[in-house]
Amino acid sequence: MNTKGFTLVELLAVVIILALLALLTSTAVTKLVSDAKNDLSNTQIKLIKEATEIWMADNLKQLPDNNQCGYLTLGDLKKYGLLDSKILDPKNNKNIDDDLIIKISATTSEYGKLIRNIEVNPENVDGCNHFLTLAQYITDLYNNSTTKINSLEVDGITYSLDTTNNLMDDRLGGTVSSGGNIRYYGANPNNYVDIGDRDSSGNVILWRIIGVFETKYATTDKPCDTDSDGDLHYDNCATDKLVKIIRADSIRDYVWDYTSSGSYTNNWSTATLNTMLNGAYYNSTTTSYYNRTKPTSVDFTSNGLSANAQSKVENVLWNLGGTSTYEIPYTNDWYVYERGTTRYTGNPIEWVGKIGLMYPSDYGYGADLGQCNKEPYNYDTTTSCKGTDWISINQWTITPISNYWSGVFAVGSPGNVSHCDASNPIEVRPVLYLKSDVSIVGTGTTSGGISYYVVE
Image (cartoon, rainbow, N blue to C red; front, top):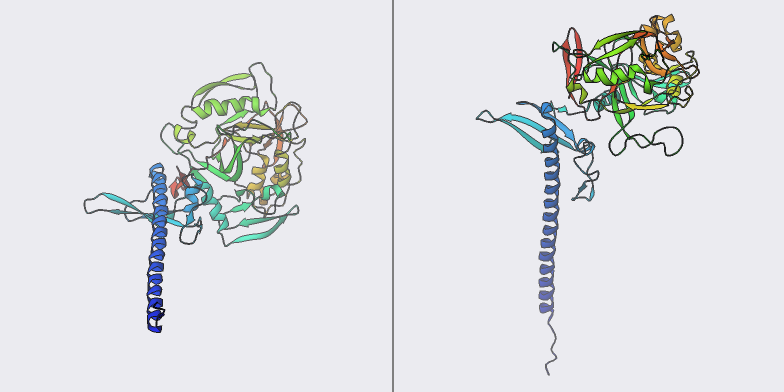
């Protein structure tokens, strides 16, 4: 029997061979894993590009022309519902950051055809515009400002004012320390906007942006019609940041409410002004309207909301809370009352619709609080208040008086918040909220010496 073992040289040869086999196997496995990750990464990039192409098809007017470029972020595509909320980077198994850039650039081929290219995570986006919703554009203006006053205190509330863009955080009427609605303020901020509204001659009907508001609105799945917790507020609503706008010019003076039988109340849900604004005005048609005792034929065919503008209007929840007096100390108090549950017996505290009116707090916050430290009912006593407030005087608000059946708050011709009987005719400037996906396509268009934003 041969019991001779392996020599040292033979053992070393076996070890070397095994090591080489292990190295080759490890390299092959590593390459397989790397190739798999690269394939998966390429798949993710393909999905992002496909989502971008869908966005491009829905936003043709925003796309860049020859030798121009623009960009989206991964977060933008998620917001538009084109991608899942979490997308993993297979190379590190972590979520891809929402700030990932997707660049869209345009060139012309040698045959004169416009070609648009999509690039994920480009080296730079110099000279490219961020394709933005109007709400995000305004919010970014405020958030990115380097000229903020962060210590302006009024009625115990510390406000933050962007003095370059005339934007402020209203702190939700002092109920939060930050993260409130972003509003325009001051004598004449750059807040005009063209929403596609045209008169019969094709001239632009301008609106002005009140601000960006966290807003409840109705959808098919969430119709905003149920109070499940008994707090008198509808809670089955969709919510998003929407831009609230007010028409720049008055559509005339109208009574807030007056029926053909001569009756009138301060219930907005049944008010004749509500019916007219959301009927004849919204649809650009004619109607008969009682301005006090005389029926008047009203023709909105050349002054109502155009079809293009209608497509941008959201169906939102309006607050109808009120108070018993116009002698409210400060604007933040108005904000809270408007969203409260105090109202005249039998009146609703909320209403869902498309066209409404401004709130007293909109007028109050329209002034430059850095100069105006007065109660809104005293704004008329000093130019530092009414003279620094861009919102026009002499117009109705949507807010009713809570202890009187026909009283409604309004901004008087002197420039103070007061109240008036619903049967009195006062100037009307319609107010509406734009849908969350309304995007900004121009920032410097000028007409009649006024620079305004253009949206689609």
